[in-house]
Length: 126
Image (cartoon, rainbow, N blue to C red; front, side, top):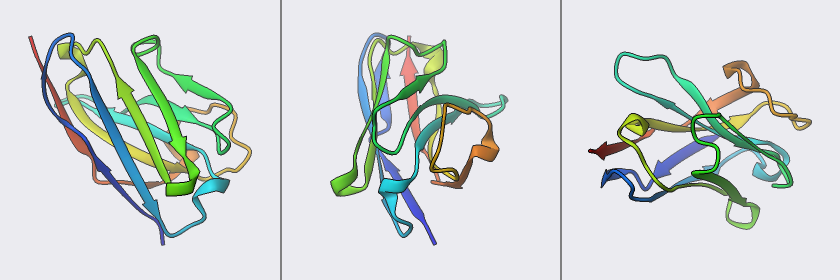
């Protein structure tokens, strides 16, 4: 059984930065891709970013490209999401997710991720 625990959310002014962390336990972390998704009130959950098991490839939603950076440290089973130049529209509950396929190639659908954390709230004020 995999457990994912996110942290690092909070309230920040527009233009500010936050770094989210997600610590994994259970399934061997290093063999699987990791992703970040978010869900704003009244909206569907959406893909934000993902990273392959080695960290060699990263993928981003167009809305965050150039502002967010995903990274991972396999030694401590943690994936990070550095968020810069935050906008009010980035306000959402952010979830990390563990991929289900070791040969991940950038899929953004929910079915490509089969374990989810409970989320950490990010609120960006204008």
